[in-house]
Length: 206
Image (cartoon, rainbow, N blue to C red; front, side, top):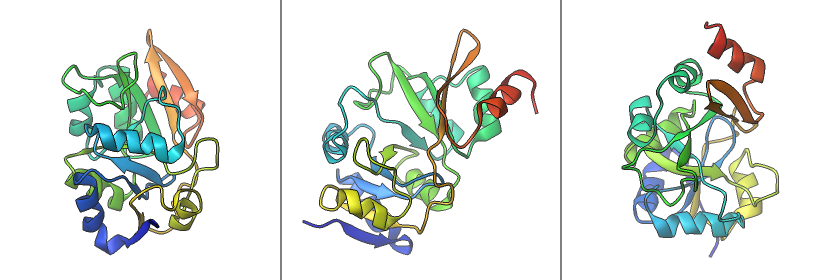
């Protein structure tokens, strides 16, 4: 079965699919991502299968608000400082998952990667599902990230239920991924925010 294309104005159709256990590609401010309800084991498994993604690689979470992020992870101290400075935007932070958050998408070491996208359509959809979605880039593992709905279909047609067509992603490159270890910034993946910007915010303030 081919993947359904959902116009942005009909985003509630994507919401219905997600809450009923389907996986759907959605636009974000960086690249398109495949989304699933974070506690749905079958849907999380479907993302791994659609991407041919190794199952030992955790899935990030997109959040609609900082308070939603705080429900599922420890954002205290310098992590919160970075979120205040760069959210919404192309920054993913890795933090300890809350004991009450038992998503199959979290890492084996008890951490979870979180981001708040700077795109109204994405925030609207994430908020409508409860504030948190498991979302990873909408491409086959090892292939370029997709920045349009057509780019998603070129790699994932028939592997996901639908793609929400929100036009080209304004950022076009993945987010920067960071964590704080012993008070020091670790850049795990370069992206939309440079290491110097992150260090300046963390160590010298605005």
